[in-house]
Amino acid sequence: MGYLFTRLQLYELVWAEPISTLAKSLVISDVGLAKACRRGDIPLPPRGYWAKLNAGQRVDRTPLPLRAPGASDRVEVGVGVGRPRVFRQDVADTSVPDAAPPEPLVYGETLDAVEARIRLALPAKFRFVHKLDNAHPLIGRLLREDDARREAMAKNRYAWDKPRFESPFEQRRLVFLSNLFTLLAALDVRAWMRGREARELGLHIGDQHVELKIDTLASLRPRKGPPKKARGEPMAVEVRVARWKHDEREERLFWSDGDANRLENQLREIAVALVLTAERQYRKALQFSYDWA
DNA sequence: GTGATGGTGACCGTAGAATT
DNA sequence: AATTCTACGGTCACCATCAC
Image (cartoon, chains in turn red, blue, brown):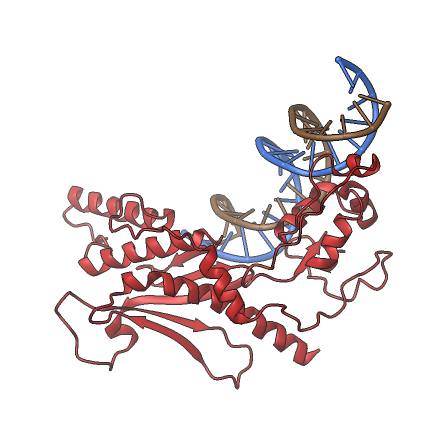
């Protein structure tokens, strides 16, 4: 049993009465309700707010911040993990006012505005770090695993498990990934990677999931251009924008080393595009469910 | 200061997902 | 199949803030 609110609905509720009393009418604990609000990036009244209000003092509401790119506008309250997600059906038979209606397709913000907001949110003075000594935790783990393999090789000449990230290209790739993940972490983006050579990459952005590939240009675009040997194997980044309809044209974003513009110099643009992709996916998903409602 | 109110953080059990 | 991981919500202790 749970409730589904839009962020604005829940915001109005938690600023209308203390969450401890609101929680009772929702049959959830106050702490659980507060956590749901935090998940939805909904500010709660500060300490002393209700006491001030009751004493007739002036109080100010903290405004509801804009929805983060790729994040859902819906907040679930009191729905356990894994259990069937409750969407609209149980709302009608509760005593809770203002239960969520089918969401209208109102975004309130153009994609251009979202992009501008992403640019502002990225740390202005981020510096690309070319060393791996303080790498992003995920990269650090790969490096430690490689160290272990290297040690095993030194101990036993017949060890078959060779280090995987020693070549100049792999090192460059890890440096790039570390910088990308670190930069995106400023926007609460969580990264994951898997596969023997960490070739599967993904990002959790808001409530969206964006997949990408970072590899040699030759492997991502096998037929394009003659291989350049000037500065080693060229690298490229590819992002697949999730499709929601089968007839939808497949959409990919692509960057690669240019003559003057290596990928390292495009890091910021790539980060912006990745987050914006999450927002676009969210809107497409919403449009999709709306069309089928 | 005192008592009331109410938000926060640490910790825990649970359950599904992921991994082996 | 057994395990580990992870996210969640609950309880509890704590403490910030208020009116008086």
